[in-house]
Length: 145
Image 1 (cartoon, rainbow, N blue to C red):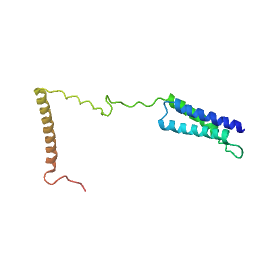
Image 2 (cartoon, rainbow, N blue to C red; image 1 turned 90 degrees about the vertical axis):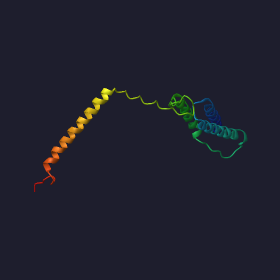
Image 3 (cartoon, one colour; image 1 turned 135 degrees about the horizontal axis):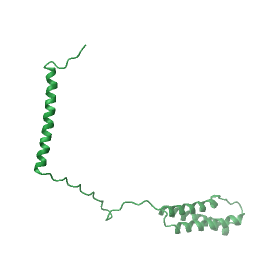
Image 4 (cartoon, rainbow, N blue to C red; image 1 turned 180 degrees about the vertical axis):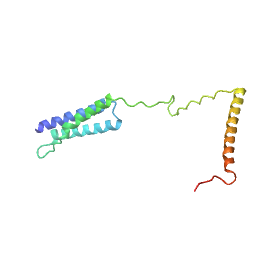
């Protein structure tokens, strides 16, 4: 069991380090963490294989699980493309919004027709208001009790 565990430490360390170096789609921080974990696996394996004579040693079960999960994570990250960001034509310079379209030019006759229509509407509202206020007289609206 001891020899198998030492070999698995070597294999796990090498797999984790190679995933960190080969997977270019990983975030740089994750790559550094993977290299540190792989180095720790290799270092503990070298310690057990070379310097350890007898006594107690610790078996970490995640030595068997972690390389598989990191490899799966690297494959998943490499397969999923990063979301596209809108790029400006020159970095550091924000995009400008296009200017609004100019309003169409109106002829003098069109402006006169529009002014006449508005004044007619205003006169109709004034006449309507005048008939309502004449019905009340000066005393205001009457209420039945």
